[in-house]
Length: 174
Picture 1 (tube, rainbow, N blue to C red):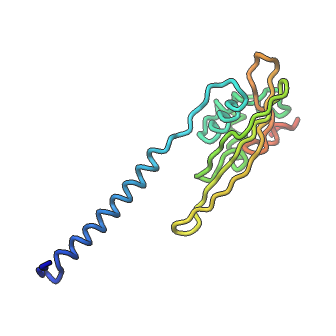
Picture 2 (cartoon, one colour; picture 1 turned 135 degrees about the horizontal axis):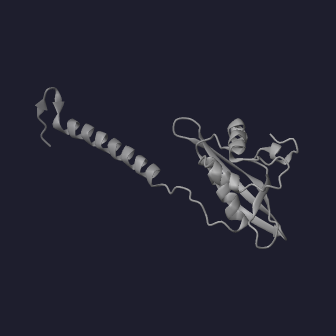
Picture 3 (cartoon, rainbow, N blue to C red; picture 1 turned 90 degrees about the horizontal axis):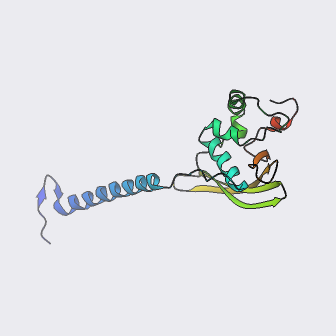
């Protein structure tokens, strides 16, 4: 291979550098494409308890207070009497009710139904940066408890181990 000098560099080293830059641009483009093409979580048709639990958690994460409020059982001792009261409870207890970690996935693991009561087990998986190229991933489960007034009535949430304000279960309220 014959190389000619141009300003102190050879053509082959210019091509090599150009290849590196093009490769980096391609990798950055692929990374953006992967992020943008990830499916966004969507609401499920209301009905079964696992759909109600999923929709409640999604509404909290998307800050759709009206939708999340609709899934609370009005039989709760500390039931917020209005959407505004619910929104205030959520805002005042954001650390209990909304995932502050950016990379959190919530998935239904199991549903148990006994009469007019149901328990939905949710797996919470979160991922956080751990160094320049590493991520630390952890997961745990929690339960969401639901009840319905009668067979044809909708399932409503009466308690949860996470993403919940315990004061909703207290006669004093929040």
